[in-house]
Amino acid sequence: MTIGWCKEVRRATFATTIVSVWIVTLIAVCAENVTSALTTRQTIPKFLQTPNNVTVHRGELAELMCHIQNLGPKTVVWRKASEENPLTLGTTIFPQAMEISINHADISPIESKWNLLIKNVQPKHAGVYECQISSTGIYTRYVALNVLKSPVVRKPKLTITGTQYVNRYNDIHLVCNATGVNRAPEDVDWFFNGNKIHTTHPHWYGRIEIVKHRPLPGRSYISELIIHLSTMEDQGNYVCRSSDLNVNSMNVHILNDKDTGIKIRAPGEESEKMKTAETGTRNKTSRAVISLTLFITHLLLLFTALT
Figure 1 (cartoon, rainbow, N blue to C red):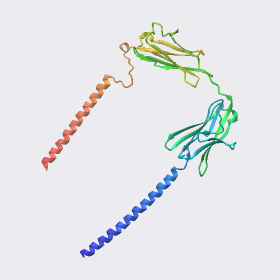
Figure 2: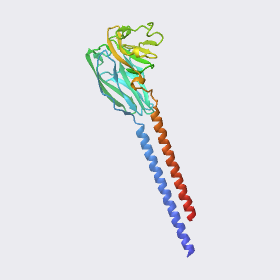
Figure 3: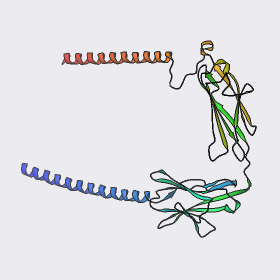
Figure 4: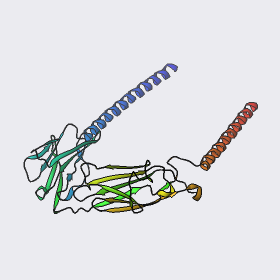
């Protein structure tokens, strides 16, 4: 009887093993098929959502966007729908037109952009453009370009930003950004309470900087006014004026924290009250942890004594 029982156990064990092998094999085959399907799906190029209707003024820069996922080794071709010959093949331009270029960059390991740039756009450039992916099957995305015949209307602009409130003896830092219509202004001047600021003036000498730079290419002229070791006499109205006679101003207030109780703290600086509060919180937490540890130790000792 014992021998028969053992045989039954062996047969059951063998059957269980066979079933387990079949199940494992079936799972492996299904996983391989799923992986193959996912890999195939991932390698199919896909156009990402970007504007497909662009409107610009004559003379502006037109950028037609084409963002692609899973491009792989395939090539991107730009063409105008009304013309047979392509404009670009990868980053190569056909024909060699100065106004056309490609803005290409890898956004992520599987995503890249192939934007078509048209400088100094004219009405002749208007129309429908095709961003194509050359492969066994041709994938195409259409982008419409509309060009307004009237040129863009630009207006001169001047802005001033910086530290409007500053503690005494801290630095005052103001930035003036002057933008011209067709070109950058020739120069920018600073005024304080109606008087032009000169770095050689006794009030400013040795503690003032005026840094000027003109970004290229562009229509902007940037001037930075930096005053070190500010005093109460530096409080007042600061004016920035460009050579195109555009003007803007800002009132700067010097704070004497001994008199007003107001103090501007640098980023990361903490008050003594905050530090004291944090210290108290840490002490309370430490006491609570110690009490909990003693309570658990007492329970363990009591359990040991009972057993």
